[in-house]
Image (cartoon, rainbow, N blue to C red; front, side, top):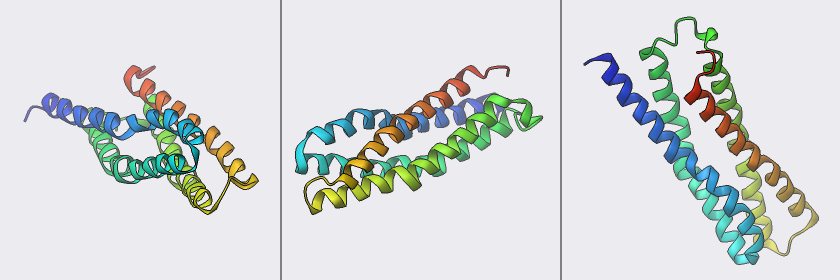
Length: 158
């Protein structure tokens, strides 16, 4: 198989993975505030939906499709040669790793805790503190993904 065709196929898989896996993150910026305004039952349902999307769609793509297709692209396109001279690539990878772990190890557990607390009764000061923290982390995740997309598309200096 022609390498350029293989690169095109893997790039397509990588792009579709980015759309399917990270598109919902942009929707969370709308759903999160809606959860806060929806009242107890509606808010809980929206937050449970966000966690379900994260666990069933985003995490599998972020763990498997993106890293594997990205690694394949690195080698197929020759970016493995003088890897660190392609600063746009390794910076994007570092941002991806940091964002992924922040989302999985911090943001999602906070939302799950908010769900448990909301089911237990009216909002407490602890609930409101967690909500404020997620209101900071959510947009940071979105901005990080935009930075990654910009780096991958523009390849500055590359």
